[in-house]
Image 1: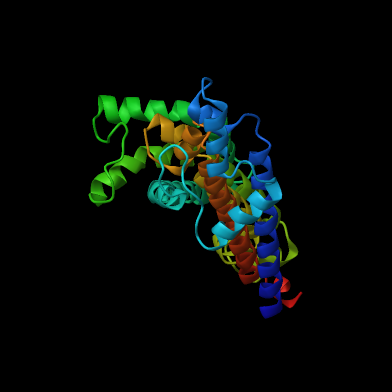
Image 2: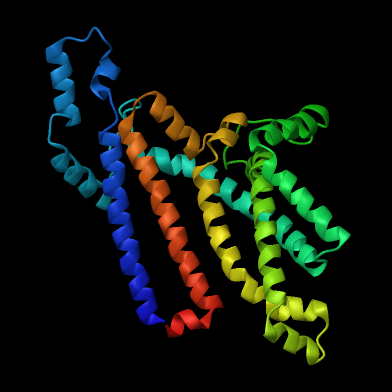
Length: 313
């Protein structure tokens, strides 16, 4: 297990290094000049040159990358060109919204998907299986922003049970949680449908294995064989989907955050792109990519915990 962990840590470090270089390179190749955008089209050449020198845009890009990477390694992601505040503080403030939202959406997706996928596999080929998978297909097909507006119309406008948007801050925990309920459900529906279908397919395949039939022959009921033997072995592809879904929920919630006016990380990236604040774009995207790589690393460790063959290999 120790050698497996060391190998995965080496891969983690290399992935982060390659990701940082790719992010900086892509942002550096974006057409347009941030200094010209900030000063406008009527800026004087000497003023423009002074601002470019102040922002470090006159340096060769390898030197700019080395300076940026050195700041990242020390926890300094730079200063926003628009707001004149540290990028790290802005990202941390927005993560207070995006991270709880992603965790709540993932919890809702798991709470829906596991019972649906397990019941569908247990009733494989029957009416219940067909109905549940048809519902899952509808959940995949529905755009989450349309479903979000439908939730607002029903639960915020008509019933007035939950707020329609905005975020009061964590100084009021109950109000903050209430503000995240509808966005988390809107985010969770497609992910729950995908997870339910993957779990059902994995369970159906696992239930046909010889060891499950042997367990049934020894006297275990279908429910016991499903829960004790099949579910654990079917969880490996499910772990992959969970890792991908958490990454998507953290990084891909920009539409939902705009529908509900949530000051999250996705909305920050959208605003930074429209304002050509490339320092914020670089820092925020790097944090998201690092989160995706870290989640993948944790999923690999979960693989090793579920499947002892990986530890022995």
